[in-house]
Length: 337
Image 1 (tube, rainbow, N blue to C red):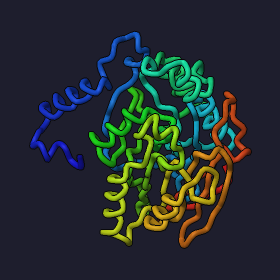
Image 2: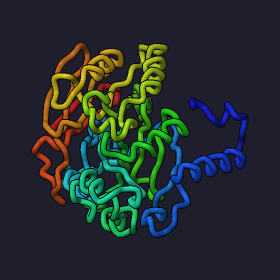
Image 3: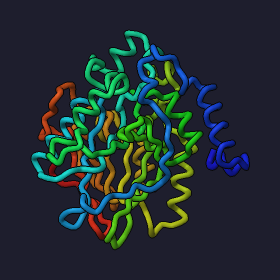
Image 4: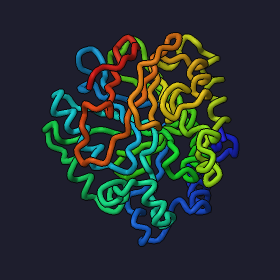
């Protein structure tokens, strides 16, 4: 559904009514209070641009922390970014997550076995707690001027440990754009095949970020049999490649995927082929829970992150965080966090 609004010739309130009807039919909104998540969960399309306030452009560029495989450990994620801010004496308005945030806003859909698998036993201080109350948000987003206070918006690609049914439906409803998922605007989904432009004052060249979530079904046959939706959204991938081919001089500087290259831990050859066609300067992935890279292929340097881990204060020097540096001239590189 590339542009459902224009296709159905709906405007304003009529479009809103249709959207609410669709989401209700999917049991995405309007769930009873005992779900524990309906207070903060929302769906808010954000378009295809991310504007960066000028105060965060330091030393001639923008730095973006990148993590992967959070598995529900939001407290650890928030604290890792706060620790980075204190260490580097700068604030980060954007953080990328290359899959497996464990985004499950409605926990009543999960069995105890699924809870243990998806959250790795971290459901007491992770995604579930974030959606149940405002406590975690208020603790890390205090609004003061210290480096311990967060300003970050987190943008994640779809992994194989996320609410696949919900995120695939969002792929259809808000094709290839950013979708906000909580009332505070903190958690944002990069729908499959997104091509998002980063913009800030003083840029000599704007920068595009491409994303492609999911994994190859054949790489996890048992999980694929249980949940076919975890596989790549091939239609979205084709649309992304088609858009890039129409303007090859404006290729994305960065590609974010969940699964890695074939020679990386738990990687697959489909990502090699996709990366070759996109030809970004930097490719960052996760999924294998082991650090790898840089792997050089043509113009691209590929990196795989370790999982964030279960600690409430993750070690920043164990390959669990990469720092993506975007320069004013549009060049992208990975630097030490």
